[in-house]
Length: 452
Image 1 (cartoon, one colour):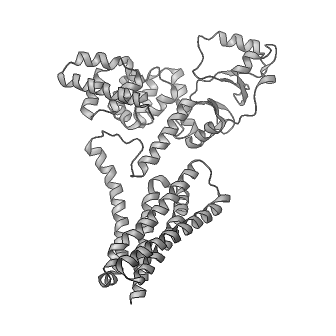
Image 2 (cartoon, one colour):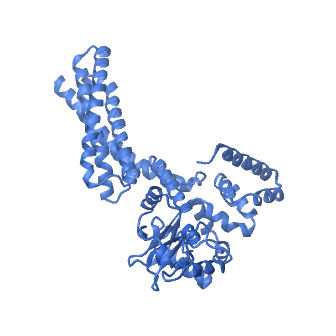
Image 3 (cartoon, helix red, strand yellow):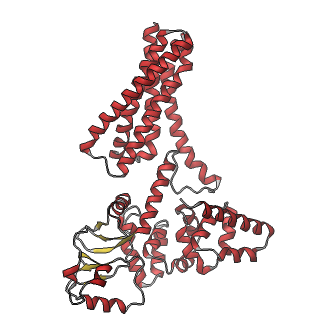
């Protein structure tokens, strides 16, 4: 999250630019815009409605487009990229890191990707082609190919002289990677150890071999967990035969963590984490319509359960007043467990061997809380309606639905994951349907039996 001062500064910049645009002083806008950093310009573009965004992009200096493009959110970036001609896109991405270029190209049709690759120089094309086969949400999609490799039989003095021949080394280089003649990863040589060790020692004698390289197909959230666990700055990436492909740096991992946080938040409403805040109506409406339709189906299921007991509700009108209490309590209890379970799954903490313990623990917690609040609710209802029977009905229904919510909160995300459905996206809707339907059925069914 950006500091408050940065947020205020960005808002002030946007306000000044908007005022300048409205007054038609485009020369001033161009000067103000191009005086900002790439990330700041990206923030301004993302914070602008489509028409203002298009004007700002046209006022941006051509040599700034690449650094701004790579800093944009995926959806906004895609809008600009798809509107570019091939030659303009090649010019814009020239100088970007291979992983950033690959991310941009993956949003384009295969035909355009081939055209862009053909127009690139051979060295950059080869680097990008190493990354393109991997999904952007894997280690291979995150990695960059800017590695410095050495052979194990070299002396440290030779390695130091080799490094001094370069004008610069890749940013955030904290280790050199040790490979054999077939580029198979053997270990890594930390720069700190290189600087303080006897220059007559060989790389093999001082290199570290206790760090496991990351497989290219590893999901990006697992990569982020490893970086967090071991406090890595960089990590090597290998293919299935152990050949070094590239490295992942901490700045890319920070992006993954931020995107996962956005995904968790936006999924609660059935939206994508890359949703453009200022997307046009024609793009935003269809996405939300789909999820509203799913929710409507879920509501109809609950409504049909209520319809089964229409006669009981007509006989005891108080039931209609109290029904939402049962559904709400089960939904809240289920949401607590669901959130905990999804978080545990994301962190890799939930496995087959501990699911049973978690399930039993959540049922025990739900039972204690259910009994407590069922007793309070039953007492309140008996006092309110002066009817002991309806108090018993709501008390029992509350206990049952809170237990159902807790059980569903564990089982639903695990089941959805096995079906390769995102639990964060679909879990809430499925949980609400279950707790509403079971809650209404238990409450009204028990009332039907006792009032018959």
